[in-house]
Image 1 (cartoon, rainbow, N blue to C red):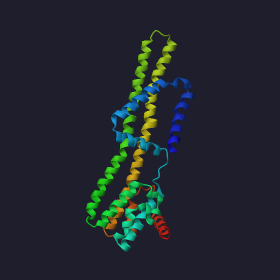
Image 2: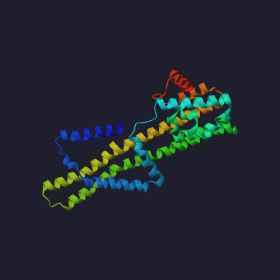
Image 3: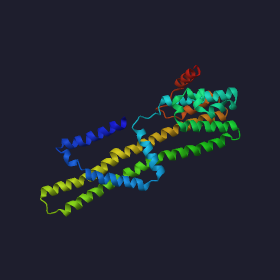
Image 4: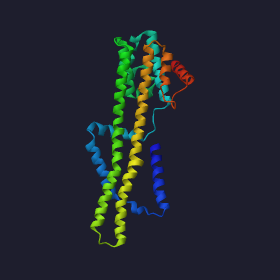
Length: 286
């Protein structure tokens, strides 16, 4: 929703200001210029990225039209689930988690947290490291190193679509100049026309530069920035799991281990100690 609001504000400001200056919107309607800029951008996007990057970018774009799901409610669900899993392991032993790890979709603990269960990245990350803990063959330092590598890989993969869009956005002003140059060439080829018609041709050429800059800084660039923010939020979920599990491996009780995880969250979504405690208590009572 915010994406649409931002686009509307941009369009109203730019074209509304143009109208207030006495401009005519008809002069800006240049489908051929838009075809050249858009087509060149699409072609460069295809040439400059492999199939995996293209697929990842197309897959990520629809999610930007919705609000971020990384909110306080989701983080509280994650930490409540972590507490329940670690508390069960502390009470009944790590082997008691095998059923929950092997079939999260059928696990009563995971089923109490449907938002977490829907995110396969979080579920896989959590269950994989709980499985390593059950094996008992790795110490906390080895698990931490492995977690860091996996989180870094996740972050790099998540930033691929953002990088693709950033490069595309950076190229759009240049493609706008290309379209403008083509318009100038067309104008010079018709230098014998009356001044009024030549002026219209020059105006059409300049629209190409305008469209390239507008698409770059008002449309494509902001989407790339938004993608980066979403990746950082998803990475924070994995970091929360990492810190909580490591705290438990180092001997802290589940309640304190979850507190470690709470402290690494962004301040805008981080629940207070009392909020988290009340939420965990309500989950345990179910």
